[in-house]
Amino acid sequence: MMSQEQNDLITRTGATTPCGRLMRMYWQPAALVDELLGERPVRPVRLLGENLVLFRDEQGRYGLIDRHCAHRGADLAFGRLEHGGLRCAFHGWLFDTSGQCLETPAEPSGSQLCANIRQRAYPVVERSGILWAYLGEGQPPAFPEIDCFIAPGSHTFAFKGHMACNWLQALEVGIDPAHASYLHRFFEDEDTSAAYGRQFRAASASSELPMTKILRDYDRPIINVEQTEYGLRLIALREIDAERTHVRVTNQLFPHGFVIPMSTEMTITQWHVPVDDQNCYWYAIFTSYSTQVDKNKMREQRLELYELPDYISRKNKANDYGFDAGEQRTSTYTGMGHDINVHDQWAVESMGPIQDRTKEHLGQSDKAIVQYRRLLRQEIEKVAGGEAPILVLDESNARSIQGPATMDGIGPTQGWETFWMEVDVKRRRGAPWAAPVPKDIAPHVRHLTAAE
Image 1 (cartoon, one colour):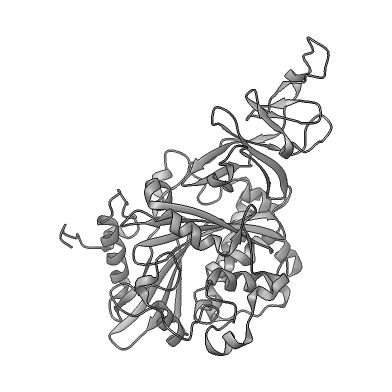
Image 2: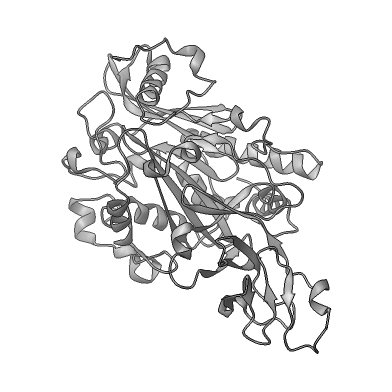
């Protein structure tokens, strides 16, 4: 259990809060690139409790500025894109992507009022299908050279989804290896050849065993947690027999991301981004190490659940997440369909808008949750003391964070410690793009020949 004060410390992300100051030292996903396609590339954005408007001008430059006009507070999300910026529909004040006011047309001819008017603005960059914003002070950090940022666009796909809850409980589901054996349990196994684009449906590496069977039959994983330069590495072990053990390696990417294996050829890098303290978006980049990503198929699969323009789930609290008692008896553990995003959404939203951690009771299977909360408090304290937190990089050390390595497969019960590294490295060396071998595992893996 923790006190209410401790819970507030690690959940509240407003501009003046300790956790909010930490979050503002990192680039934050603000929107998908897809959201600014079309004839009018303007979108309202709420991020870390701030009301903003995102737009692209005629020259293709992105701007993220305060949503309410500096003149008299009208809503710039309804503004006009013209003459190099976004023009307020109330009195025609025009702002460029830097927030500088360019024109105040209702003022007398020759007025220089606009020269002294600047709308608060934040820098925006595009990476792997996502528009990232930096809401902090000073120079923005460099992006780490992790796989999802250096893979070519043909081998990545980005998507998002809304959750009506605090960002922290949403993140903690992703770093909880034990829950998948229950929350995502299916009573029958499917054809793994039809698993493309669907999580927990493929066969584990080096085996024909479907993930659904492994999670169902081996529900007491041994969980190891290691601190890394980028956050945490989680290793979940499910012993099949004396010779074989299922090994699943995932990562917590500080401050609010994780990297997990989706299949033998694809990983998911996902961030849980605070909209405000009671809502968040998950943003995911799917990265392929083999063939090009079928973006149309991936998008169509996900749009079956998520409704545009706000990426709200069609299954939600208002319709009991599609719960069916008959299905719960015979088909799935939750009775909420076969999309695991619905399962996760129910779990975290059912805790309430902000989970009351003063009433929880943690066990051994929650060790990753405990270590992450400890790390989060540690980094909040560092920022409060004027230090830079982990993963705030500059151009000189951006390449120091690579990978990170992931794996989901059946390995030897004796020797799994290096087996998972070899599987990850083999996949990287066979990729059609230059997927680097993370320096933290490179020394432990023998050299593989081209044939291997």
